[in-house]
Image 1 (cartoon, rainbow, N blue to C red):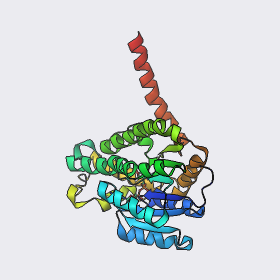
Image 2: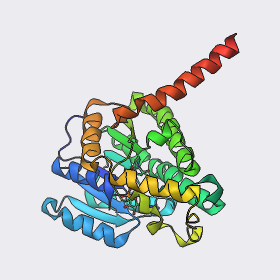
Image 3: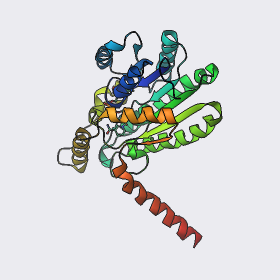
Image 4: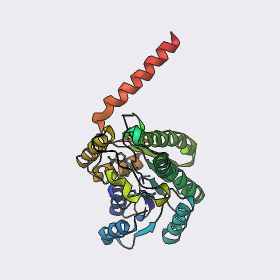
Length: 277
Ligand SMILES: NC(=O)c1ccc[n+]([C@@H]2O[C@H](COP(=O)([O-])OP(=O)(O)OC[C@H]3O[C@@H](n4cnc5c(N)ncnc54)[C@H](O)[C@@H]3O)[C@@H](O)[C@H]2O)c1
């Protein structure tokens, strides 16, 4: 999609980090933007920061883990701006640290937000995108953790691999319909991802922090430090805009992490060679 001005984008997780940067970048392109997020006060201040773009900015409190909530957000977006052209399934949380500290409730929370949130976004917006026939683009936020796994964070890695996999299938499904798909796979980005538990819904119980001095605590601390030193979210948003314009599928922002993916591919390749032999 080359001509973005006047089109409409819906962005989840838009109150903070990468989602806010995406919303701002779309607004700068004179698009209509619906910002969706579970955290109402943060959403309000995000909209205030984009006030210069009124009346092309609106917001909706939406829990992506709840299908009905996303359907309602889709209806409100259509009522505010008409057809939606760009869907960013971006909301995500990074629950879990050391594998021994990950409860089943944490697994469910991360799967419901990171994976089912993307499923709900597609279910709520794709029928409208197909029906209006003006073309569209779906941007799913995965991670480098969707292409290679490190220790800890198993639910996060599982959901991000799933988002990469479903995006690959979706791109093939929609190729003939003029609806593009991109999957974003960033390394560390300077956002509030390490504080994801701030928006953990009561239904999933309290997050249990890893015991002080445990391997899980060390992992969580390293994760927070890496995010703090990470890429500016605006740089991620700029890459996404370019990908929408040119129809790129994989969107990488951390080329220095290529080696880690190469190691995985080499292991897979070696396993195939053993199978052949
Ligand atoms: N920051 C990184 O290093 C990094 C790296 C790779 C991928 N990502 C991915 O980027 C995406 C955005 O995260 P971020 O880094 O900007 O973190 P962030 O915490 O700054 O922003 C995430 C936003 O998602 C919202 N959110 C959480 N649960 C929600 C729910 N149930 N429904 C709706 N909104 C919800 C939060 O309120 C928050 O505004 C996530 O999918 C994350 O996995 C982040």
